[in-house]
Image (cartoon, rainbow, N blue to C red; front, top):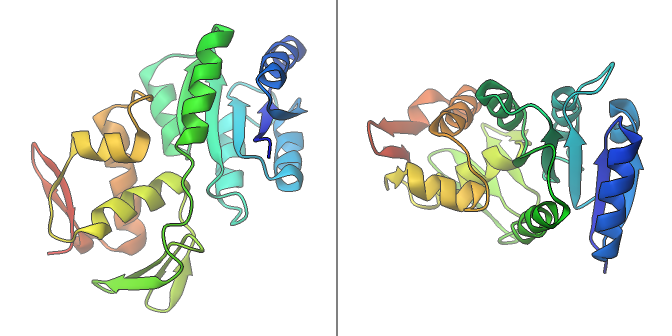
Length: 223
């Protein structure tokens, strides 16, 4: 079955060029020219990957990403931002809103295809069909849900993957390098602040005491 990719960009030339190269690689490609249309198309197509421009009129890519991540049916769709902006704060904002990768324009077609293949390889499938509970937190890997005090939480993909890693071995200190390799992979370059942002979000949703900072090393879950 062909992998489905949705392109969202307000520049027709970009849509045409990237769409052409993706179709040549055998992908099923859909396109939208603005954020609102992109959200509607994503809900309709259920793509495996969304390549999303950041700078668009009316609704920018960050806002689109936040809306998509809030939709349980799309919360774990892989999203790569495509933008001409390369400032650190812009990249951090992209990961903060739930993006999985950050591709700066202009990008050569071969390099883009390599990033696309890497992102699709990292798409995770449900790990098990049962639920398990630790420290009052239940993880349902089949439904990508976190349950605490009887309340079901749908986390953005990276938050869920980061929690899954720390939760898998309570008390073990995971180094920043291990967290980056497991959650973001070696194909994506992200800074330490990206990890801190995601930990902060998990703490705000599940409780500060569940996550322990080991200064200069990394993080652990539980006591």
